[in-house]
Structure formats: structure tokens, C-alpha cells
Amino acid sequence: MSTFPITRLRRLRRTATLRSLVRETKLDLSDLVYPMFVCPGEGVVDPLEGLPGIGRRSVDRLCDEAEELAALGIQAVLLFGIPESKDEVASEAYDADGIVQQALRALRERVPELVLVTDVCLCEYTSHGHCGVVQDGEVLNDLSLELLARTAVSHVEAGAHAVAPSDMMDGRVGAIRAQLDGEGFETTPVIAYSAKFASAFYGPFREVADSAPAFGDRRSYQMDPPNLREAMRECALDIEEGADMIMIKPALPYLDVLAAARMRFDLPIAAYNVSGEYAMVKAAAASGWLDERQAALESLVAIKRAGADLIFTYWARDAAGWL
Ligand code: PBG
Image 1 (spheres, rainbow, N blue to C red):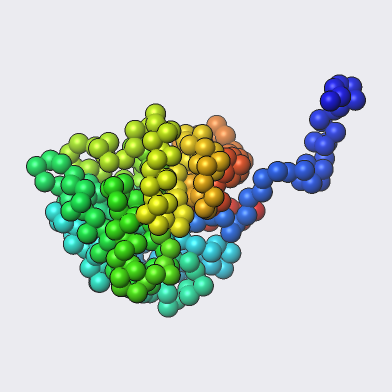
Image 2 (image 1 turned 60 degrees about the vertical axis):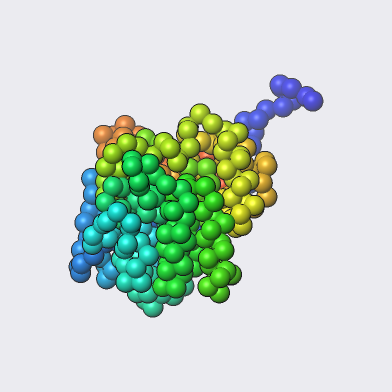
């Protein structure tokens, strides 16, 4: 291999056109999924501090925004619900008239071209804020599976095109797959939040979704941040249980996990660029410390370079204008 002065890597960096010819990773709007939060009421747009630009919306306002998103070229959204009331067993999560179910029916009618993915979890719906059923201070695994599967089915009945379980109970992908198949929904994909770490970066989300645990934390079910090999086991198990896609979450602090999963598995891999990753850049940009657009696009391309096929990101809407 020749070296300097024969080889000069700067030759291909000289102009914007040359750089674009040799660019190895490209972001496309079709890679991005926009998370949305739906709440009860009418005419409600409730902006929240921790996630600038993102708010809770009632079904009518959610549909208005979804129409705008589709017009901008966004193809898919991820839905979260903030219910009217919460209880011990997350009743509104699997209620045919729950908030997400109402939103799904309305969105299907108003914006039929939009791909609707739902987050399947109990934490927004339980009075204690945990992702499963609690007994004697413990989050019970097997009892939670039934409620999660019921939630997934009710989302699909209401119009979800894909379901994304984010609870981190063992066996939930298999339970959801079996229940969907049993109800005749064998064509509906499951996007598994496979390697979901117990992360400080979910902070702003929990404010928006009002889902912070009332006691303890999520470390008995979400993954321990230092563990990469265990993350591979989580992915492998979800694939065996029938996941159509796996997800790594958060994204930026876990790019090594994403890259390792990319090397090992051939199914599509998603990454979730979570609320804290977004909020950090927003806050720094608001202080004039960095350029939001550049920092956001650099973050998203890094996530893609590390191996993500698709990215769940609060920047999807802005990216529609940037790309
Ligand atoms: C529900 C769920 C959470 C997120 C996605 N689904 C919160 C949590 O696990 O505490 C976080 C998303 C984000 O921070 O943007 N379990």
C-alpha cells in the first residue's frame, strides 16, 4: 500500500460533491419513525418541557399532526398513550376503547398511508408505574405476559400495523406472537425492544408519558448497562420467539451493542434514539453551545453507520425538512 505523498485522503474530501460521491452511509427519511403521545380530551396540545417540540395531543390534534407528517414524507409513527385513569392491572392498556385504540381507529381513517406502530407496555397504565403486574413489591413476569399479549391484540384489532413490546418481561415476544396468531393476526410483525437498558436517558419521556415508577426502579427487568453479551442473548431469544425486528435502546450510548448485533443477526435492526439523547442536544442548542441540526444529523447517521436499519427518533419531523 502506498503512503504519503502518493496517497492523500484529502483529495476526496475537497468538495461537497466529491464527499457525497464517496459517502458510505446515507440517511433517508424512510429510515425514521416518529414517536407520538396521545392523551384524552379534545383540542389538547400539551407541550412538555423535557421534550421541546413534542407534546401530548388529544386524538383530533394527533390526527392533524399525523396528516402533516404524512405530507412531509414521514412513513411511520410509534404511538404511546396517556390514559384517563390508571390502576393496578393497567386496564386501559387493553381496553378496546382505550386511548391508543381510539387513536388507532381515527388515524387509520384520517391518514391511511401512515404505518402505525404501537408501544406495548403497561407502565403508562399502571398506578405504580411499573411495566408489569406488581405483587409484594415484585414485578411478576408470567402474570404480566397475559396482559401484554392482550394489549398487543387490542392494538391490532384497533388498526396497528405492527406492535413493539418494550416491557422487557421474559417470554413476551413468544406470548404476543402466539396470541396474535391465535386471533388471526399472523401477518402482523412484532418489533421487539430486545436490548433495552435500564437507562437514565429515559428521563424526559417519563415526564411526558407520566410513567415514572412510584417505587424502586426498572433494574429488575431492563438490562444492566454494562452487559453486551447478555444483550446478544436477549436478541437471540427474541428472534427464536418470533421477533420480526429487534431493537437496541438507547442508541448513542450503546452503539457498540448495535454494531455487535448487526454482525451477528440478519434480521432488520432498529435503534431508539431516546428522549434524553434528544433533550441533551436541545438544551445545548438552546444555550447556543452547538448547532442542533448538525448535531442531530450527526447522531442519526452515527446510529445508522453502527448498523441500524431504522431509527425511532423525535427528530423525524425536523429531519423531513433537513434531508
Ligand atoms: C415504556 C417505554 C419507555 C420508553 C419507551 N417505552 C420508558 C421506560 O422504559 O421507562 C423510553 C423512550 C424514550 O426515552 O424516549 N416502557
